[in-house]
Length: 235
Image 1 (cartoon, rainbow, N blue to C red):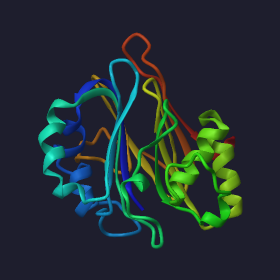
Image 2: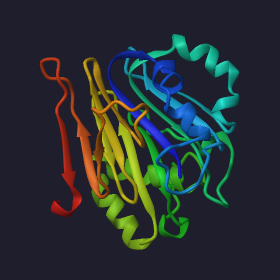
Image 3: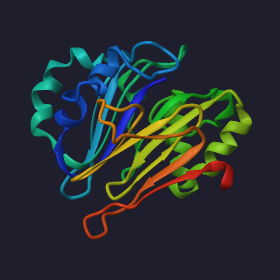
Image 4: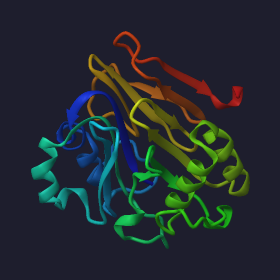
């Protein structure tokens, strides 16, 4: 299992989203508070964001986040209004190189998978960034289209009923998250919205998204971002 977050709103520094929160991804890399499976997330990390031109930029590593001094020195000056970051706890048997670390991308969307799935349930794809389960799953989601992510997840779950298929995605204008075997939480700030595996602090405004739900954060309308949470049993 892994931990991840997505930010959509006014530009914020990567450090303010990933390193600075008291229970943020840096802390979750060695002491997650809500993680149900696994105790640390030391098998890599990744940060992706959309730049001012809408282009996807990424920085990924196979090392623990807490040991990345070069990232810590640059993260305060990297800023974006669309950020997706993750720390990784690799499934046994999966590769440990940086190409297996989320976020994955099709050039427009950034995607992170928190969970595991048998590769026998995932037909291999040449466009996958890695042979790990998360990368192959991401390639299937991109190929089918993010708007069909619920159908894709259901198809995979039928092939592997024991799979955990929690997803978090952004294209720079919206966030799509899906809970399948775990939960998400979201926080509405004055300048944007963050969706995460677990709250990065003890602010009581955090709202939990239950298992088997879809959360969508839409483009800004008159300064506000519409948020919908849908029970997948109703779809």
